[in-house]
Amino acid sequence: MMDKDWNTFLRPYVQAVDELKIKFRGMRKEFQESGAHTPIEFVTGRVKPVFSIQEKMQRRFIEPDLLEADMQDIAGIRIMCQFVEDIYQVVELLRKRKDMHIVEERDYITNKKPSGYRSYHVIIEYPVQMTTGEKKILAEIQVRTLSMNFWATIEHSLNYKYQGEFPAEIKARLQRAAEAAFQLDQEMSAIREEIQEAQQLFSYGKAPNSHK
Ligand code: 0O2
Image: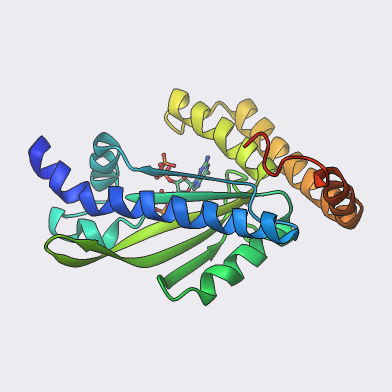
């Protein structure tokens, strides 16, 4: 595909990522303004870069005709949560929405990946209104704790350096670090009510959302 064609192909994905970021950030605001604990800490999103789409097409033997159907993470949204319990609350909220349709869920929290990776993945079908009419695209929403995100971000950059071929020692350390990150989540969950009470006290008398 030529650059111009990639642009046209990716347009609805760019639109979807922009819209979804606004919607999920709006959910956070709504929780904050109601005074309730927000299960969403922050939201990021990206459209997969063309070189990364091409690399994955080669690795997974994806034919250009099947790109839209077979590559589910061209549009990617990440929702970060404070607690593991929040992840399941976010997934419940996604299941109730009328503006998207869940086509698949992958629970890499209960079933962590061999690398040590944990996150909850939800694949949605999302309709984008283009000038040419409605276009339904697939998007991957990754829901994870701050601690899972810390691990995944670091592992991802190391992966880039070693191209997935980690020296045994680093691989073992990463797996141990993943367990440590998960233990941190469990410790935080155990004192969740204490923390949330403190956070609510802290938010009184402060400008809402003063630093985000
Ligand atoms: P990006 O944009 O660089 O993050 P596959 O890619 O074949 O492993 P599949 O079936 O396409 O897997 O989907 P999966 O596993 O549900 O989601 C893939 C995405 O999940 C990856 O995207 C990562 O974002 C994340 N992920 C999965 N496993 C790991 C892991 O071991 N470590 C880290 N850091 N992230 C992981 P990409 O394709 O890497 O793209």
